Image (tube, rainbow, N blue to C red; front, side, top):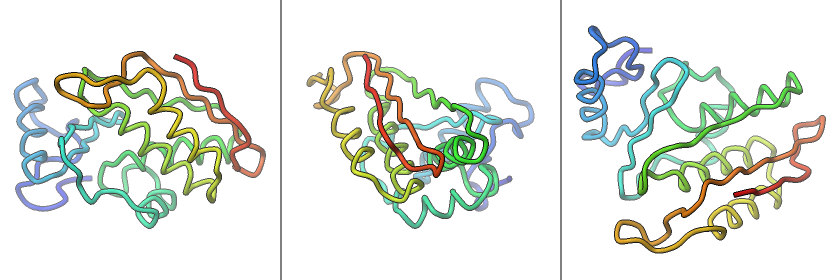
Length: 173
C-alpha cells in the first residue's frame, strides 16, 4: 500500500527509505497536516490525536473495512478492529487490541472507535454501546489538557458467541 495521494506521506512507514526516527516523524507530520491521522508500521497502527473532530468514522466505513484485509484500505482503527473481529468469529481465537500513549493521546477515543467498529461488525448490540459509556465513566477526571482524561489503565473484555454476536463483557482497571 503506497500513498493515498501525492505528497500525503506513506501509509506504511516500513516503506520509508531509510526508516529512521527523523523520517518516521516527518512522515507522520506530513500525514497529520493533511488530516491523515493513521499510519501503519507493518502490522502496528500509529494514531496521531488531531485534537479536533474529523469525519473519519461511520457505519459504512466499518463495513468497508470488515469486507477486506487490513492493508487493502488506508490505515484506520476499523482495519484493526475488523481484523480482530474476523479472527474471533472465523477462528474462534481470542484477540487483543492494545491502545497506549501519553496523556491526551486519544486512548479513550480510540477505544470508543474500536467499540463502534465492533458494534457494527456484530450487527448492533446494546452491550457494546453500554461498554463505551462504562469505559468513559470509570477513572476519568479533568486535567489542564483534557476535560475527560483517563486516570487508570483499563481492560475491556468483550465476549462473543459462536455466531459472532456479543454476549457479555468485563471492565477492569
